[in-house]
Amino acid sequence: MAFFIGVIRVVWIFINCYMAGKTKYKPFVLPSDFKELELYVQSHKTDLTERVISSIEFAIEKNLPMVEVFNFKNSDFVITISRESFRDNIQNVYNFYLQEEKYELCGRVKKVEMLLDNTVNLTKPNEKE
Image (tube, rainbow, N blue to C red; front, side):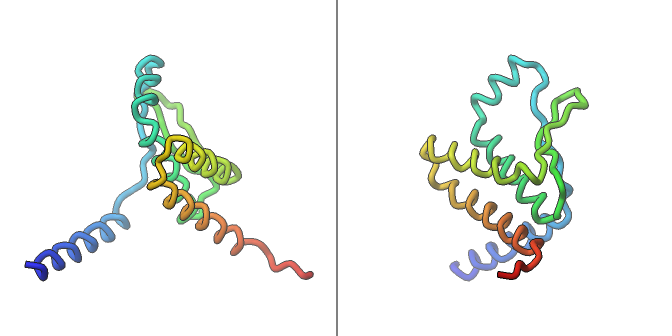
């Protein structure tokens, strides 16, 4: 039985890794009606902050100068985050998780911050002391 569960896990990991390369990134669609949007944001704050982190992570991995995070239903308006704003947004999400005591999500935010730090360090020219 344990062998069977192990095989299932390996297949599941393979499928997820394979599909990750095949899926196309799409911005998250928000309601365009103000009242509906307000209610949605209040009830889905954690989901929205996770979307911000996922979008930033995608942009870092693909070396994009900006990323579309949200768009609005039946509208051409899009919310983007520029590379210059990645760090501020990461810090804001981290602070939100601390304030809301969602400590289990803080590790992922720090991982994305380290990913950003690593890409910044790779693109910086070596400075002579």
